[in-house]
Amino acid sequence: MNYPSIPVETKQFDNLTKQQMLWKKRNRYYYSDIKKLYSFIIPPGSTILELGCGDGDLLESLRKNLNCNCVGIDSSETIINNAKRHFPHVEFRTEDITKINFEEKFEFIILSDLVGVVSDVQIVFENMRKLCTSETRIIINFYNFLWEPLLNISRKLNLISPTKVQNWLSISDIKMLLELTNFEVVKSGSRLLLPKYLPGVSELFNNYFAKFPFLKKLCLYNYIVARPLDIKQKNENEETVSVVIPARNEKGNIESAILRTPQMGMNTELIFVEGNSTDGTFEEIKLLAKKYNFVSKNKCKIRYTRQEGHGKGDAVRKGFELSRGDILMILDADLTVAPEELPKFYKAITSGKGEFINGTRLVYPMETEAMRSLNLLGNKIFSLMFTWLLDQRFKDTLCGTKVISRKNYEKLKKSRLYFGNFDPFGDFDLIFGASKLNLKIVEIPIHYKEREYGTTNISRFKHGWLLIKMCIFAMKKIKFI
Image (cartoon, rainbow, N blue to C red; front, side, top):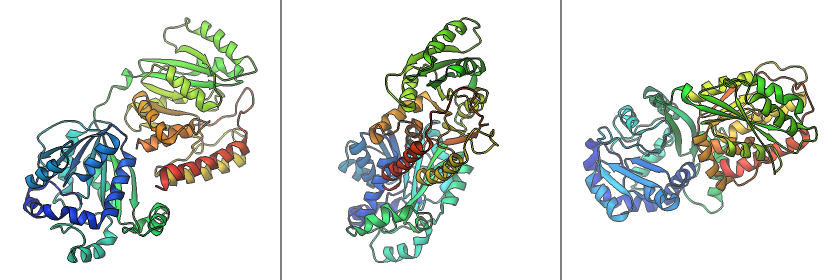
């Protein structure tokens, strides 16, 4: 357990300093799981502040394994001096977290085992807002109140660290306190059904059984990832937009895409990425770009390229690399999602309502032939699967319209080192990356229409099998860890 920065308890924690290592040794499996969780959530090279850092062991682990720039604060000078001696490469400060006297900004703020032992959680949350940017993530882990009787017995037997105060807070309680202090929960979860190591058994219980809906409520501890709200961002008219349009055998839709895509923000560019068409799509793009680039300064500027690789995912990545906008959008060239709907996505991301905006075709009624019944059923089944796998709501993973900021896309690219090159669609590369970054994901209902030109490039059975493979991939890389 990491000890908090509340003055009234300082003397108590000073007296515990010598015993910290003993308790951690006795409960090394629990503490190693905490480190595992934080190492998964936090990207390498991040700036981190831990409130109530205790002996600094967690920060040292993140510094060493992820090359993070770490700062820890605690009210006990004895504990801080001890941490400095053991971990000289981490910066430690003696500070009261209810009266922090600095205003540095951090990418991540950690409250590990803290909310259960401070006298006023709301004040702590209010006070840490000044340390946040709009992109800061707050990570909180805390005991599940269902474990109160067993933990109380363990304290009496001196098996875990004693505390003077223990607030037994549920996930709902923490969410309420975060909302009161203008934070929003992005993701929450539970870990450790079996907090002691038993070869083979612990992994089975904690990596697999603990992930299922009913059993996870019995886990030892909960965690929450939150983000601050109402942090000033750019005015929505100050952003520039790049709309990437992958196009394969879509010659008859190119002019409509150009004429119907609205101007958004300061300026909007269209980037067509043509992929091995046989109907003259590339020649049509070249012709229309020359025609429309000089018609009106109020219309979108048109750029284009030819794809060397294969698949929509490759086309999207190439388009994003060529783009110049602050906001990156994907629009399918079949125009089954109307370009006129894009301003909804623009408003959602520039207002801060979401950080990764995904369209959903499964809300409004569809035109008769827009989606076959089998495809519709499959999409609904997979939406439930991915909602469970990613701990964020997903209604339609395969809607082609997706929006992300350039800044977050650059972060997402780095997460490909973790996931690898696994997705020919491109949808899951973005979805899994956004989930790994703990971006706020918002879905916007769109009106899904029949295509007016050409035939679909989707093979329902081939792509259905790919969806199954994506589920298995997400289980391995995200869920069962």
